Length: 267
Picture 1 (cartoon, rainbow, N blue to C red):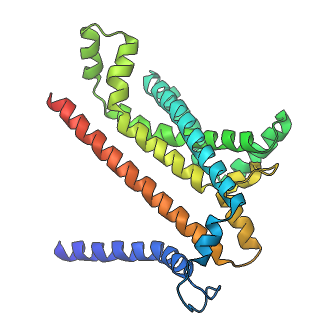
Picture 2 (picture 1 turned 180 degrees about the vertical axis):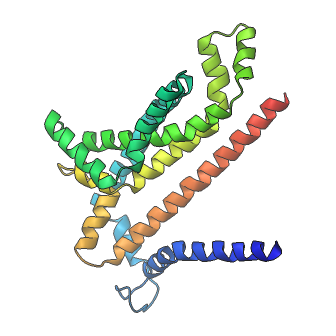
C-alpha cells in the first residue's frame, strides 16, 4: 500500500511537471534581454514595459474582461434557471433528453461551434463584433454552469423543501431562502468556470469576431503569426497570473461558503 501511494505521488509530480514546464519556460524567457527564446543573455523588464505601454492592447484587455464578466454573469443566471428546470422535470426520459441537449455544446469541437455561430449570425444579420462574441460566449458557458449547479440540486434533500412548505413558505420563499442558498457553491463554481472558459477561448471567438473588435486570445494568435516577440511571453505570463488569481479567489469563496453552510446546519 505504501509503495502504491509513493508511486502515485511520483506520477502526480510528473504530470504537473509536464503541464507546467512549458509555462515556466515561457515566463522564464519573458525576462530575456536577448529578444529570443534560445540564449538567455540577461534579465530585463523591457517586454513587460512594452506590454504595459501598448494602448491598443489594453483596449483589447478591457474588451476581454468585459466579455468575460458579462457572459459569465448572464450564463450563470441562465444556467441556474436551466438546472432548476431539468431538476424539476418529472419524466426521466425528458430529463435525459434535456441533459443530452445541454451537453452538445460541451462535447462538440470548438471549430464546429464557431463555424455554426458564424453562419447563424450572418444569416440573421448580426454584425460580427462585440455582440456576436458575447452571444457566443454565453451560449457555450450556459451548459458548463448547468453541469456545476445540477449536482448540488441532486444532493439537496427533499426534506428541506418539505419542511419549508410545512412552515408556510410559498414557492418563491422556497427558491430564494432554501434552494438558492444551498446551491450557492455550485453557482460560484459555474460562474468562475464560465469566466475561465471565456477568458481562454480562442477557436469560437476567432470565428465570430470582427469590425475591429478583438480579444486577448485572438490578439496573441495574430501577434504570434507575425513572428516571435517576447512581448507575447510577457503578456502570456500576466494572463497566467490573472488565471491563478481567479483560481485562488474561487478557492477562498468556496471555502467561505462551505464554512457558512456548516454553520447554518449546526444552527
